[in-house]
Length: 127
Image (tube, rainbow, N blue to C red; front, side, top):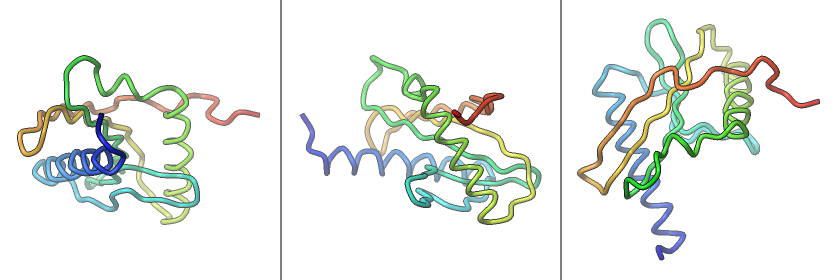
């Protein structure tokens, strides 16, 4: 079983691979691992007409789809963090939510970019 440090290094390698992939596709990277309080966004990028919030899921095997780890609870957290990000930086672009699955081991990762992977639920905040 990997140690916590190895697990964190593996996740960071996956995020780095996802960041380089997005750059190669012409995305401008605004932030990686943006945090504000308990809120976190893996990658925030942009194009000329959209803010792209990317949730990165890294796995070393194929037995589960990394995107399956993006639960409704996780989506609510990403939406709340995106709302805080947009307000903090006064962003005037529509937001799109993507998932990048990074599978395998560095440097031979397989990357699957799922655009518009999810949409904000109508009732994002619990009362």
